[in-house]
Image 1 (cartoon, rainbow, N blue to C red):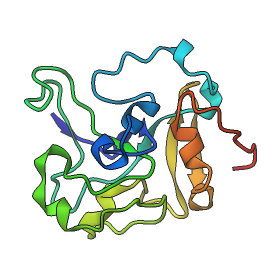
Image 2 (image 1 turned 60 degrees about the vertical axis):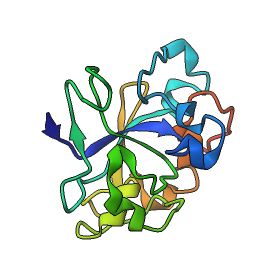
Image 3 (image 1 turned 180 degrees about the vertical axis):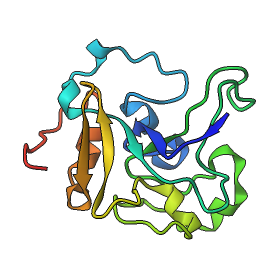
Image 4 (image 1 turned 30 degrees about the vertical axis):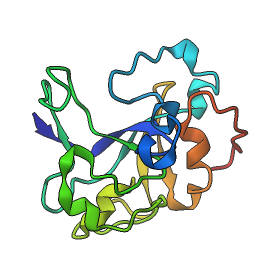
Length: 163
């Protein structure tokens, strides 16, 4: 196991029970994903795989496990929907004290436990994201309105080229 500052992008939301109908699976990286490149019909240059998010101040969020008891022996990488919700992931009751969300892509505070519910970084003005085409790009916080479209693999959204 290891502590990581990166999360897989699971799609739009982080909890299908809150959002309703499988939003968790609208991205590429999620539990037991079998997503193939051919499933990324939005284009690999327009689809996010991973993004930055520092570990929570109590180090409860951000752990990657090679064999996790949560996933019954399967590798486990933390994931988050682009519009994160305080969903109590991994049975962490402290996160239930956070506002439900959704959380925008915005600057966070390393000491704020609720900032574990969204993508952000310690860099000034944005964070790095890995795309399905293998590229890594720094996305400014001003790109918040575009990130939901980039989080889906087959949503058919139009993504402006100037984000």
